[in-house]
Length: 159
Image (cartoon, rainbow, N blue to C red; front, top):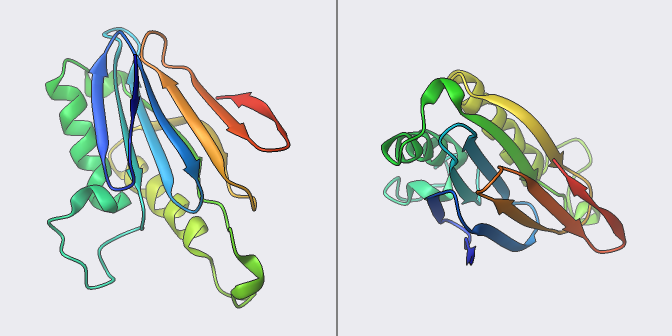
């Protein structure tokens, strides 16, 4: 069964099903997986952190708050912290011509925040498909932890 993960949301599950995000742009998907327990979690974050005067209560919108919460939820579902690994997808610059050239775009900042937050939590990133100037769709299979990425005009990538 396929479960869609909207922006600012997350899902955690075990063994069966696929978590999907369609039309991912500058947002970043974080997929956590413990292969021994077949427990996985996916968060779809919009921004690096709540520095935009947004309510921190919306923790799933931000990489810096969603990742620690996702780790805890996957552990509560049966994963072990020491066996968790991560994959990152997204962080595109969809409107490069509208941005100052010397300033990092929001996609780059989202990816950097996700990498740093995962490193601080001791979670290894084992695959990435990030950056570029194109949207993606992401499919995370819980039976084996595989993440398939599709983008228009590009071969499918498995990370």
